[in-house]
Amino acid sequence: MEQNWRKEFRERYQRHEAELKWLYLELYHGDEQAYAYFLDMLYRSWTARSAGLKKLDRKRLRDANWYKGHELVGMLMYVNAFAGNLAGVREKLDYIAESGVNYLHLMPLLESPEGRSDGGYAVSDFRAVQPALGTMEDLAALAEDCHSRGIAVCLDFVMNHTSEDHEWARRARAGEREFQERYFFFDNWDVPRRYEETVPQVFPTTAPGNFTWCEEAGKVVMTTFYPYQWDLNYANPAVFNDMTENMLYLCNRGVDIVRLDAVPYIWKELGTNCRNLPQVHTLVRMMRMVCEIVCPGTLLLGEVVMEPSKVVPYFGSVEKPECHLLYNVTTMASTWHTVATRDTRLLQHQLGQVFALPREYTFLNYLRCHDDIGWGLDYGYLSRFGADEVAHKKYLNDYLTGRWPGSPARGELYNDDPRLGDARLCGTTASLCGVEAARYEGDDAKLDWAIRQDVMLHAYMFTLSGIPVLYSGDEVGRENDYTYHDDPLKAADSRYLHRGDMDWAAAEKRHDPATPEGRIFSSLRQLETLRAAHRAFDGLADTWIIPTGDDGVLGIGRYYNGEKLVALFNFSADPRRVSVMELGDFHDLLTGTPANMSDISIPAGGFAWLLCDFDEKEDDSQ
Image (cartoon, rainbow, N blue to C red; front, side, top):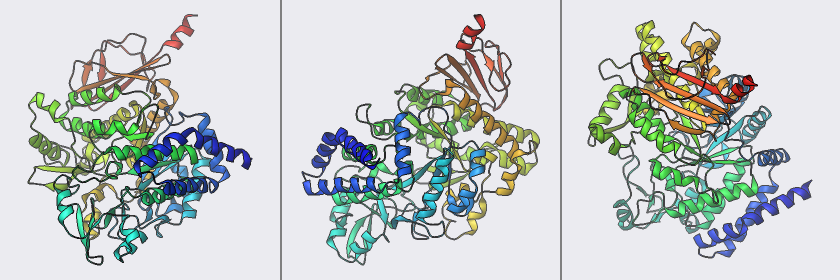
């Protein structure tokens, strides 16, 4: 068996050898010695991979589209907030499975310094878990348990930078030139000032500038995100070699999906904006080939939080793919815009662009995540309707923070920049939908509407092609957690509003249909079950926008292998009746009752899933 596996490794490498070697030597100026080390590292990583993981690789290779169908449902969580530590997550796997989840994204859990970690995104050791969360052995054990249940495990790989406490950074501060060359060190501010002329600031209010003075080294170091996060220099092949080995080490602990954090930033070049440079795509393409050689059951998820024109290239091409998965970030922002404006025209426009992409492209769809909501909308399109960008952003933030008269939403601003009239938004799905405000006011009618809107948004997310991902707690309508205001380490970061601890007392109510928790949980489980059962939701389905004649109602059509779905979503505050020109005998997927497509009634904040099975109709006629 081992001999056969060695043959498999050799055959996989040979399939990629010409391209991989050419890309590597072109990027690193013909450094044959570095390439030889790189190949040796790949083989060492493969030999270190367990027999169980190699068997899983082979199983997934037999079904290369295993992640592209309509069965996967993800859940994103902070380990400590969800269950205390990795062992606690293992104990909660029954709950995770009961929630219909088979894709588990564990937020950053590698070792990082307390108070200087940016939520775990300043890694001081890529091969150690934060002690409070457990050990690498605990991570491997959790992954093994997940695999036994058919659950894939996703983990962030922070590749743009390390913590200033990482061994490389410590040795760089001590003056070791080899390790200073792994970062961007400068003797004075001359070159950094030239960079600043063209490089935007990521956090202009909380972490202005892209460089920090390192007193111990007596030099300036590049720090694009925060002063304690030192940018890695991928022009140095030692950085790429060692970081790739760190990634493979995590894959060998059982990680199935590697989330490439901040991937557009990883190549720096003076005179550019240091974003999305061609060399970034070379690096990602090489990482894709590395995975296909060493751990072909592993997926790469690119975190590219930018406009669609910048996102799509990270899929690569059919012949030379890069990331397997990308975030559908613009759709997320456009969705909350639609909640606030009750006007679906921008969302129709944006989804139309997504629907026009090749069906082979797989997006992760989400309503909320660990981060804030940034208003990167298509303002050129919105200007057709008289929208001014600054004024429009202010309205969205006013509405979704509850400042706008009559708004039921409860969120908070993040990185508010009064000079630019700009800010981002924080809050859980339930609180932004109005569940929190309705419960506080004790208004049952408002609560019914808020829960209906919450479920409608999830139904809309499940309708889109790709992998839907729940933010932990959304399955039971978790509300904002305001206790972060009392924690000096968190108070300045409003993102902790939606990063609170899991309320297990509330989760215990998930089977009680008289509670909001039970109503939301049972509704989402029904949606997940229906989605998995019907081929119209398959990732290879044809998708299109259906005209509804009502700007408050979004219509989406899906067709695959004899099944057609008409999905209608009422974003308005009032009941609506619409007519849809789609041929076929449709029935309501949730109730089983026949649907009159010329007169469809949708409650305020509600939706309809209407299905026609043409194969079933043919069977009935025979």
